[in-house]
Image 1 (cartoon, helix red, strand yellow):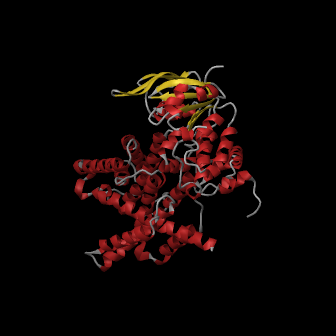
Image 2 (cartoon, helix red, strand yellow):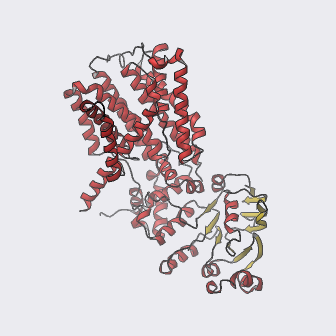
Image 3 (tube, chains in turn red, purple):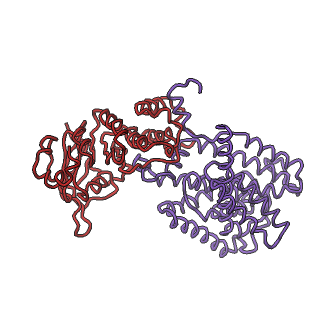
Length: 252
Length: 328
């Protein structure tokens, strides 16, 4: 099987500062991959290069075998790349239904329609209803995002990406800031992600990483330190030294 | 609440601009003005075309979040285009409106290319620059525009060949009202459609829209062009019923006034344009009649009060009032 997301020798330099150094990474359909590393390891910079907000100094980003290094973020989304944000990035003064609707109409290429809207499209409304019901948010469909609890907003954050039916999903610290009481819901949601979606999760929470991921890439100073399966990374002395050791309280 | 299918509940979670009692009240006010306010028909027609102008701003600013202090660029362009069309091509009014809309849309399309790449203060300054450039252009091209003296001497044929523009302004008022009605119905449909939601999404969170795969600048471009076309209609209407187009149609004051109107009325729900324009024009007229030197102060005080106590404008205040009454 061919990888759906591939980074080939990706490098990014700001002047003399090398923030990404020759990173190679492949995600196959159905992958559950975690990207970890201490603060300042260059995780966010790497994500920006995958989504297209930042241009790499060298190397390539491939989506489904197609070189997308020169494409805008929105074109990459059209090719099946979706992401969630570490800090909720929602449409706060619109309703839950409208938030999901924005994702659905964008996916269907209907977002520029002048005289039609998607509320008359019963297939899309059904889809939105199923999605919201699976998150137990159907009752809140008519509420504005600002009226929601933080954990619920976090779910919408992921739901927006899922509504795009992506081939590759980037989850940027999906459980950041969620109180442990609401966390289990979110974990459930992540475990129920569509099986075929290749998922890359960027996370500090080791509980989630070890529960969710099958493979882990450890990034240190912009370069890949280790890439291996969960068990191997867990016991790797180098990883313990640079990452887990420093933050022993977070380690599982 | 009655039993509903899940998809129905989602569909009802979409906010929509519906026709309400306020529309009936406004229509009634227009009819009453026609029959009983004959001395005020000229003023009423002025209100109507300002409503159209404010509606166009609501589309760009209220829905799309485009900051502008140069919307007069489109009003003035529409006005000059319609006047020149009447002078040199045809005095037929409805095609004149379309010409005004088309030329203004073209200016929106071209200037939007530069303006919509920027945000916030930069965007505001660019809109101001475009309007100022057009103002100076009209000022310099005296052979075409008559400069300071204003463009006059054109005639407008009866509407549909039937309704002659009379000196009491009856035809002018009804004509403006019908144009408003058509534009209002179209805009209501537009803001309830997918592009209306897209515009609000861009206003709320541009970055996320891009990450949903929406070509943000292209959508804003379309919205801005449509907004310019509507402003062009307002300008063309003003040229046709006033029989003169002056440089004031392109002036900063014009741009600023419409922003104040929309702030008074409230952004992003179309009604703001109606309420804001009515309050602004009628208040200006009454205040100027009472105190011809200090009348602007009255508007200033009203604006301060509205911004302080009803930050979402009078229409927002009405919506909240209705919500409170229903929940209590």
